[in-house]
Every structure is written in structure tokens, then in C-alpha cells.
Length: 599
Image (cartoon, rainbow, N blue to C red; front, side, top):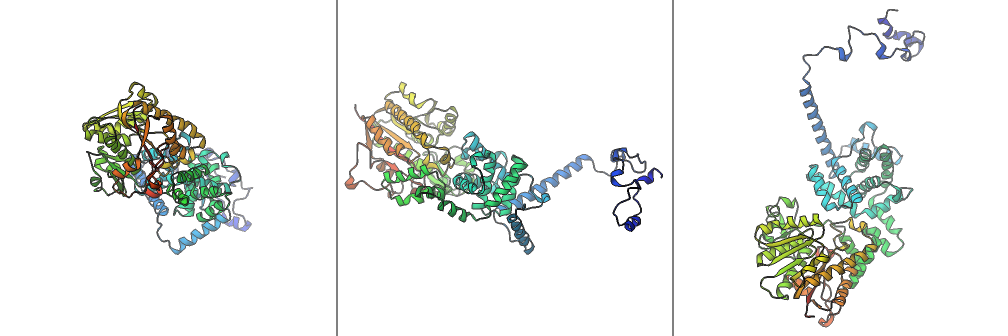
């Protein structure tokens, strides 16, 4: 046989006569008997690709590369557009597409994958990948989502609806983590503690989309599988696929009813329904009772912790006003005269905020700072030029508010923060005020020791003490899962030491403001009783009077008033202020005021 004829296909008519689809073994031309391609003889009439001459009509590599890059960018834009449309408000589908969707749901019930292998996403989309990375940072590095998320969005240039989707997934997953874990436990045959943290975070993100967002089932599952494949591996992606298919078998409301009905007591049922640890549910009930409020408010309070808080702007007195902020798609707030509620958008794009003449600060935080200032100027030493001390100044919101007031009235503010990086935040927050002429000094020092060299020096001492943060669960939802009841003894001891330092640095006739962002009784009402017992030189002031003086709404609800106007001077009962998310729309800030009398 000629050498070149050896590789020609045999006569197909002969194949048809034999009833086979290939050449006979005897011919020596079957596929398995053919020599390997590299051993085949070189054919001059048809050279291999690498031996072919250069084609003049072929575009240069640079042009071809640019074309490929343009095609890649176009495909990425189309994929982002399709994902965004699917994630939010999917357009009405044609009849054929609805049939395909029903078929996909049917396949899921039969244990099949939703999409064919060629159609499955191989990589997670940017929005979900960013959300996953933020959750990982929160879990592994004890980061706060409100600090990590903006940097991630900015670095990856995620904007618009994608940024809103990422934000909703991060905060929503953290708020409902307890509820999501309870549902996942029903779908996994081993404890969640045995799962790797990254796998658990992918499952939480997927379950949140299935239970709480208007994301189509196939999109939530397939994108979560793609995210697991990209970040963890193929084995994890199969596990995620199997678990999320079980979660998608029931609607979110049905899952909530199931885990609530499985609760063994009232607190456990409220914890499951509103996604709080049981000990926090009990603590909030005790806080309502301690402040004389109706215990029937508890479900409303728990529900308020799961609402997305609006961005509140703070005008710096003397540099800007709430009315000026209202010109930038904001609304003047109800209580604090310096506050304006931002309707939407990035506050950093507002010139007053960008220049440091205004900032972002919760309205409750603004209100208690203004009340402390009012007490110092009306009930304090009466000195024309006063010196104020912010003993726990980081990250700088209250320091900026007090600093602007001090600059306007000719007083001096000393801001102390123990952590150097937080002291830098205080410096940055107050820098525009110093440039405007305010006398503000920032020191990186331990507040418990700072006043040893500054005894009887300050007309006002503000101690916004470290606490459990149960009053800011709307803004820092990870705190509810990070904190433990065992944290309280160490925190209350630190709070007592900071108060002792504040008393040491306070002038006779000066005002001490004790502030926490927590309604826990051990950090509020019991702490006030302990302060008065340990420091007989202190006398309580009426913080309610001061808050009403500075509030625009004089009828602000501060809880039941003492009967016949009687107050307990020994414990401060009836004189303190507790704000609530479900009543005031603020963080649960607590304020107690004292004055230092002659020994």
C-alpha cells in the first residue's frame, strides 16, 4: 500500500455492507491501530501549523489582542447586566423561558443540577465575591463590616446597584445569621461547627438570598456554587449545591415558622424569629423593665435592630447647619438640631462633609453630646474659658461635635484615645476644626492614667465608655454574635476605672457625662448606682431636663416620669436618659450626668 494511502478512510460502502461504522481490523486502519500523530510522516502539501508560512492577510497580534480584549469586556458587561436584572427586578419572561425555569425546578427536586455543565458559572460575580470577602474579614479578623465594606467597594470599583446589592447581602447576612444557621442545621447532617468557616459563609450568603431577597432560586444557587468553586474548590461547590437545594425546597416564611415552633421557651422563640442570641433577648427585656417601659415593646425593639439605619449627618456648630445639609438630598431630623437624615447616595460627595464641616454621626450620639455641653455651660463651674476632656474619644464623632462647640465659644478640648490608630481617626475628624481656629489637643494615652497628671483641671469630662454595644446592633450587626455574657465583668471593671479617672480630673462644680451605647442594666442603671456609691463627692443631675432643653421636639418620649416628681438621688433613678431604636429611631444611647461637689 502506498505510504500516503495508508491514512485515507476506507470505502464507506464496504462499511455499510458489513453493518459497521469503522474500518475493519484486518485493514490495519482502525483508530486504535493508527500511529500517533507525532509519528505520522510529514506532508509537504499540508504542513503543520507551526511550519506554515506567515499569512500577510492575518492581522497583527496587537490588533487581534485588542479585539479579544474588547470582546471580553463586552461579554463581562453583558454578564453583569444579566446578573443585575436577575438579582433585582427580572423582566417578564417569554413562555419558553418559563417552561425552562419549571424544568430546572423539577430537576432540582430530582437531585439534578440546575444548569448544564457548559452553562454553569465558573466564577462568582464581583458583588457576591466582595460580600464573601467582607464576611471572611469579619469572621477571621474580628473586623467591623461598616469599616471594611466601603474600602472593598471602592478598591474594586463596585458602584450603583451592584454596590447596593453587596451592602444588602453583607448586612442582611450578618443580621440574620442566627436564623440562617438554624435553617442550615435542618439541611445538614452534622454540626455547623464542623464546617470550614469559608464554606459556612458561602452557605449563609446563599441561604439569605433564597430566604430574604428577590433573587430567583436558580440564580441564588448557581452563583453560590460558582463562588464556592472559585474561592474554595470543586468539592465544596458540590456540597453547597446540595445544601442550598434543600433550603430552596421551602419558602423563607415557612422556614421561620418551623424554627420558631421548634423553640423550647418564649425567649428562644423570639431569638429565632428576630435572629438575636437568647442572652441579648433577656438583657433587652430587663432593660425595658429597668426603665419602666412596657415589656410588650420587646418584639418591636428586636425588629428595630434588624432594620437598615438611615445615614445621619451631623452639622458642626459654627461651621455648618442642618438646614445647609438639607440642600443635599437630606431631611432635617426630629430631635437633634444639628442632625439631617440623608435620603441616599454617598455622604462623602457632599462638600460640607468632604471638607470636614459636617460628618456622619447617629442622631442619638449627637443628642447626648449636646446635652452634656448644655449641662457644662448652665450647671457647671461657670468659667468664661473652660477646658473640656473627652476621655474615650475614638473614633472622633463626639470629639468633633464638642470641638466645634468649644471653638465657637472659645473653650479648649482635650481628646484622649488609648489606641494609636483610633487617635489618628480623632485627629483627622478634628483637623478641619483646628484649621478653623478651634483649640483641640489629641493625645494617644490610657484614659485610666491620663488624669494622674491633670487632677482637678477640667470643667467637663465626657466618658463614652467601652461597652457591649447592644445599642448599635443596627449598625454593627456582627456584635450580637461576637459578644458574650462573659464579656460583662471585664467591661464593667474598665468602666469603673475610667469613671474614677474622670472624677479625679474633674474640677469642683464641673460636670461628668457618663455615656454608653448599650441599654444593658449592668452598664446603665446599675452602673449609675455604683458610681454614686463609690464617689460620694458626685451628685446626679437631671439628664432628662438637659436633653429636653437641646431637643427640637420638647415632647420627646424619655419614659415614665417619677411619681409626684420624686427621684432617687442615691441611685439616679428618674434622672437618666435611655434612647431606643424602636421609639426614637436612634441607637440605644444612655446618658447620666453628675456634678462634683465639695468634699
